Image 1 (cartoon, one colour):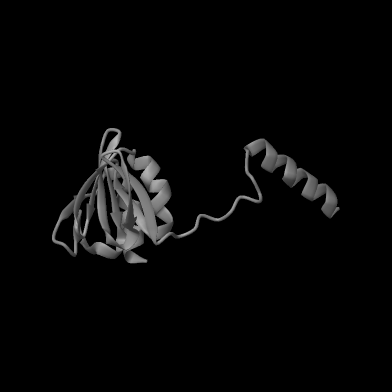
Image 2: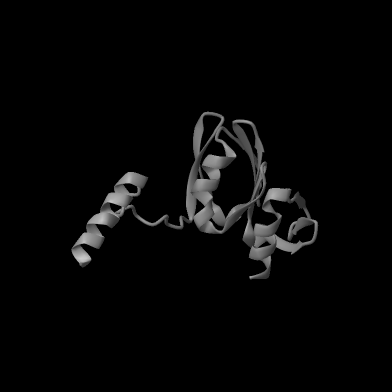
Length: 129
């Protein structure tokens, strides 16, 4: 019956390493980043896009560029709930700044962001729906 099914599901979750009580990723209005050894608080809505340089990220905000010692993968995990999308292995973009998409993204700030082959279908899907 149902008990057997639930036992099997718990066993599968345990095997796959899925924590059932894991909280949902929450949207944050601010994030803390380390710039030149100093922690700074940034309003997420002011982040336009991020560009990866190895273990560093150039974070382009409405008030300028910051160099942050963090990988793009780490930052993607932190910002994805806020509507940021990966468009290229080196770029993470705030969707609210995207103006148009053709072969590349054109931002409301007129910057052009490349879209990698791996990400084209995802970007097109997100832009259409």
